[in-house]
Length: 529
Image 1: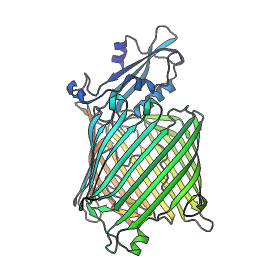
Image 2: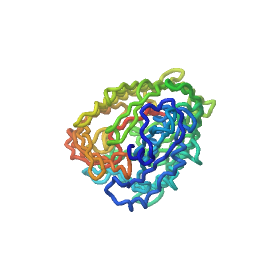
Image 3: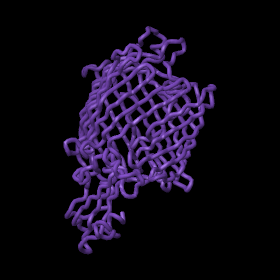
Image 4: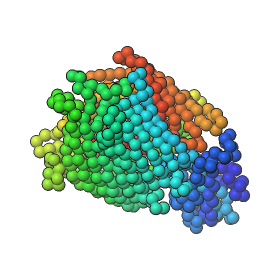
C-alpha cells in the first residue's frame, strides 16, 4: 500500500470519511511482480484484468463523498473474482483538506492453468478430475474450461463457459455441457450440464435481481467404494439409471441496507426418473430414489445482517476473507399441484435460520434448517438439519476449526440418502463408504499458521473425523498439508492422509483444491427439489 502511495505521489489519508473524491487510480499487478522470486517471463501465459473491469466494480465515484462501507463492499466484489488474489481499496490525500484520492490495488493470479482433483484408495484410483482453464479471457473475467472426469467405470468430457460480468454488465452467465462414456464399451451413456443467466444482488443497495436457468443430469449412477462398484446387502450392484432436469425462473426485490430483506417470487419445473439396471424390488425400495414431476410457484423471504468479519488463515492462507456475521433467515413456501402438471398434490414449507457471532478474529455459527411437505392425509417428506461451527481465534500456532452437522429425515417418501466417506467429511475411508437417510458428522481440525517459502504459503493440518449414517459409525485421524500459490490461485491446494479407526481398512490419500468441510457463504440450498 505504501509503495502504491509513493508511486502516485500522495500520502495515506487518515480520516477520509465524507471527503469529496477527486480521483480514482487503479494499480493492477501481474501474478509475478518485483517482490516475487519467479522470473517475470512467466506472466506471458497470463492476461491482466482490464482496468475498466476493475473500475466497473467500484461503488465509489468521482465527485461523491468517500464512504468506508462502499470501499469495503467494492473490495468484496473484486475478491469475489477467482482470478484476483489481493484487493486493497484505500484513500490517499487529495489536493485539499476536504478532498481525497482513491487507489484500487489488485493482484491477478495466472489465468491459464490446469486444475485437478483425485482420490486414491487401497483399491486404486477412485476418481480423477482434470481441467484446463482460461479464467480471464482477454482480461474480461470470463472463463473457458475443458474438463475430463475419470471414474472406474466411466469417463466424462465436456466444456464450460462462464462470465461473472456478461457483456460488461451486472449479469452472470454460465453454459456447461458434458458427455459421459462407458469405459468398458466406449459408448455414450449419459450427459449433464447447465445453462443460466442472472442479475444478482451485486451490491447491498441493489433493488432487483432475476434468474433464468436449466440444469440436467442423465447418467448411470454408481456408488463406488474402494475404487469399485459397491454392492447392496444381497449382492446387487449399487447401480441405477438417474435422469433429472430442472428449470427455474425467479425475480427478487430487495429492501434495506444494514438489515436486508429480500422477497423472491418464482417458478420451478423438476422431473426425476430413477430405474435400477437389474430388477430387484428390495434394492429399489431400500436404495433407489423415488422419481416424480413437480411444477410449482414459490415465494421466499430472506433476511440477513449486512455485517462482515475480516479473517485470514481460514479457508485460504494469508489472504483476507470476509465472513458474514449476525442473523440469516430464509422461509420458502411452495404449492405442488397436479393442476400444474405435477405427479401429486402437496404443500411445502422450508424454514432455516442461522446466527454468527464474532469470537475474536474467529467466529461461532449455528444453523437449523427444516423442510416439511404435507399432503391432504399425511406428511410424506420432512427433514431437519442442525449445524454448529466454531472457528477459534488465530494464535501464533494456528487455528482450531470444529464442525458438526446432523440431518434427520423423519419422513422420507422420496427415499433420499446422505453419504459419508472420501476427501471431505470422513477422510481416510473410501468415497461414499456410509450411506443412509440420516447422517451425523463431527470434524475437528487444527490448521497451522502458514510459513512463506518463495512467496508461497505452506501450512499443516491434523484432523479427527467421525460420522454415523443409520446404525453404522466410523471415525478416522490424519494429517495433511495446505498450500497456496498466490500467483496461481487463492484457493488452498489440500493434501490429506486419513487413517480409518474402524473396519480394518488401509489409509487413503486425497489431493484437491479447497479446505475440507467448507462452510457455505450463507444458508445452503434445500436438501430436496
